[in-house]
Image (tube, rainbow, N blue to C red):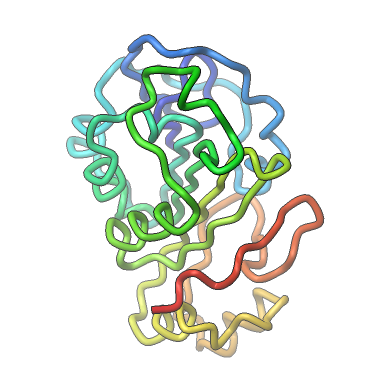
Length: 209
């Protein structure tokens, strides 16, 4: 199931969870090209008016679920707890403004937190300890996108975080070499974690410990 947290009036998931709290409402349709490869598309959705943390704690995602937080995490009073409540999901995708290039935090006073690329990596690694995480800049460096894939095998996760598989560009070969212990996601299409996409600027391997 695709769960869109903080979707406003338009959802890219099967379920949309939004508190309805006031914020500066802007269209995020320009982000479709980044989110659709992971299965998040605008369409019919069950709309739920609820606090994100309370809903996730009452309905914890499982490995078959995918969670999206697109320009919503910065509005939340307890972002770490929200991420941790989503930690059971097979895929977690987060998009936030890049404060190094984007002045959105000065315009929208409902933004409670900002994350540099390194800080975003740090909070997600702490909240999602069973996930392999990548942080990339998108939209001419205006936004940051973090993609977290659950990896149930601790040894494989450690190898990924230490860059052992950074040269792989074939997901099927990577899975085969890991004896099928590596879980990519249940998204609509498998996107190689290490393939450089022309419309993204890859950061250095910040997940290295």
